[in-house]
Length: 80
Image (cartoon, rainbow, N blue to C red):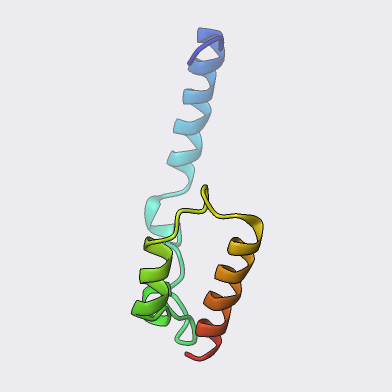
């Protein structure tokens, strides 16, 4: 690690090793499963919205074009 003294890195490795030995991996919980009411982004967005996003270059939009595009996307999303 750039700029970190070797002694600090060595000590950090010692502490990490100690902590890992104190708490076996089987006691560490994994990330919780997503709840049933959570929806994946891909399953919510219609193909129309995805196509608009793919074909929109925000770097060339005027402010009013950006607002209109966002309004249209929002309107389509509410129809889902």
